[in-house]
Amino acid sequence: MTTQYYTAASVDGFIADENNSLDWLLQFDDAGGSEPSDTGYADFIGNIGALAMGSTTYQWVLDHHVQPRVGQPRPWPYTQPTWVFSHRELPSIDAADIHFVSQSPAAQRSINAVHGQMVQAAAGKNVWLVGGGDLAGQFADAGLLDEIILTIAPVTLGGGSPVMPRRLVTPPLRLTSVKQSGPFAELRYTLHSH
Image (cartoon, rainbow, N blue to C red; front, top):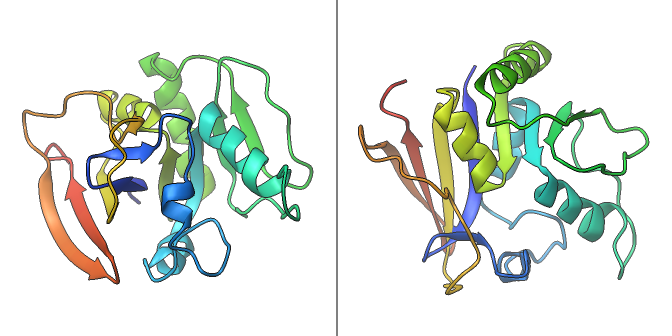
């Protein structure tokens, strides 16, 4: 079981633009889904048993997938149990296995307890930290992040939400693989302490 932060980013290191938009990424998806085509997402998600996301990521999925302002609504895209970390009240989704965590994930005891619940629910599969970067960073701070899988898209944004808004310098991340998938480059890093 591995806890993974799997995300796409611009060449200059942002996972969303300054308006929390992913239009820059979705332009590559000719199928109209929530992930760009030909990136290995189907293989990745097949090995995931539980997910965690912050409130901004959850709200984005609601606004652009489940209850879009434009286009047809689609069901919640995940069958796995999902933990949503937020300081605010968020709407739930019928028929989705969602657990809201109202306490700050920065509290190490809290994040360790929630991570334990996620690992148990994952039943031997991996845990995916969907985003954002700050939530993944809080898991890293608690020593609970094992791997970063970063898919680099061939765009620059000039600003927005960074991949990881904190320093992970010593020890440095360990690069374990580099793969080209069409216009994307996938970089896999393990945290050296794991």
